[in-house]
Length: 361
Image (cartoon, rainbow, N blue to C red; front, side, top):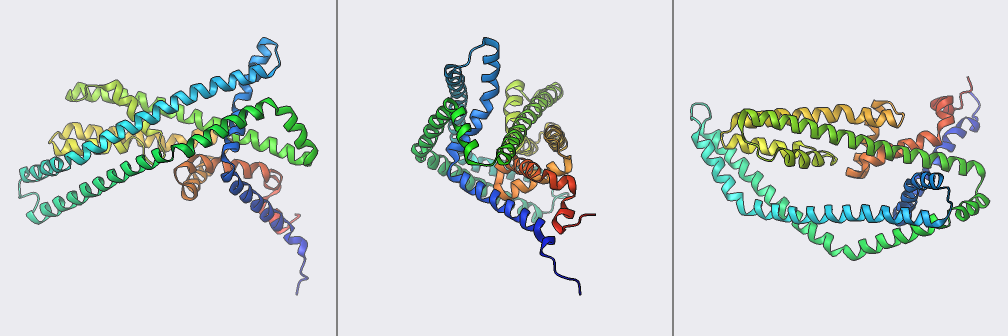
């Protein structure tokens, strides 16, 4: 019988310890989100501050505060506009759906009645009608839930405001006393930890920048596809009045995780079929499939290329992120993978499984 050697398990103990530590850091970060956000924002604006300082040859807190202030004013204005627009339009659309659900059902029944009974048996027609009634009922309940969600968000405005105020104040404090904070940390923790922290910070920022760039490219590509597609469809059917507006709105919706352009275009196609506009419905369906396929193929490649990951690894990270964290996991998954890659860089280079089992070959 071979002798038991605990040293063989040192690698496993090390990896488990690091993973537990990272898990605790993430858990604590949830309760300190305003400060985490402020650190991320400071890290984002720092390159702009350095660029301005190098160009103007000045080095003081006024530049830092001005850049941060402009950043908050710009982002704040865009967010407020987007939220207000979404709430107002979402509420109007919800009311429209609730008011017109009976009209939709009657149109569906007319559509089914207009089809020759030779092709669709009566029992199947009744089943389809019943199914559509259930779908409309489900949509109505979903809309009512959406209204209640909007109202609950409005009720949470005070908490959201406190979060934003703390985040803004802490970011101004951090950016003003950045050097002092850095010196304090240098005295408190080992230099190897600080080095690893800087690598992780750069890695996370890189993933964020890559993700934003990828989304911008995909949105622009989607807009071009929609604009050209709608223009061609309009030449054939003359059914699209506001090509530019529709292309803009749908390409923004396409950027939302698990939603995409199909969330708008497939229902649009179904409504066209119900209204006997088969050619238009088919063309919209084909265009929506093309946009969906383009995003599914390009998104992992764009993220993996910039973040220096294999496309398959990036896809796994996105999938696992969504499974554990929901929609935001599309971004969190690659970030966590990037952190693990930096933390275990030497072990991966050596051979991760070899390191775990203590194989020195």
